[in-house]
Image 1 (spheres, rainbow, N blue to C red):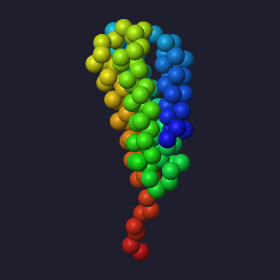
Image 2 (tube, rainbow, N blue to C red; image 1 turned 90 degrees about the horizontal axis):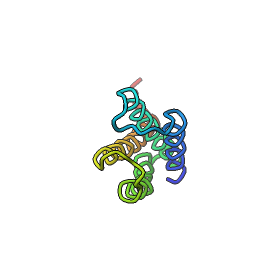
Image 3 (tube, one colour; image 1 turned 135 degrees about the horizontal axis):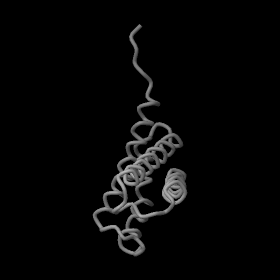
Image 4 (tube, one colour; image 1 turned 180 degrees about the vertical axis):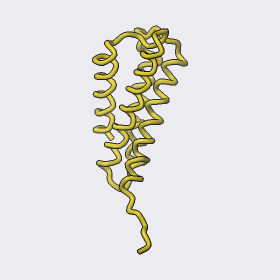
Length: 120
């Protein structure tokens, strides 16, 4: 769980601060919004997939457990981090996208791992 969360934190930090230069996405260009969305999707999928890989056979459960620290992180961003110029709903939807992609990463990892039944 914590390794999946660490991957998400690392990738979102690199994506938003490094690649996108730390500029605000709300009110930005459509390219900036799409790039920010891709950072959230890729980070969530990677973190969920890695959490699912570490806990083999329980990919969805381990990816869902990553939501525990992500929820704490989201509460901090939404209620205590006042640097954001975006409205509440924008940050909430961004966090929801990240969380949904995290669980999806666990689902994908479980589907990749599952042995295929072949009739030969």
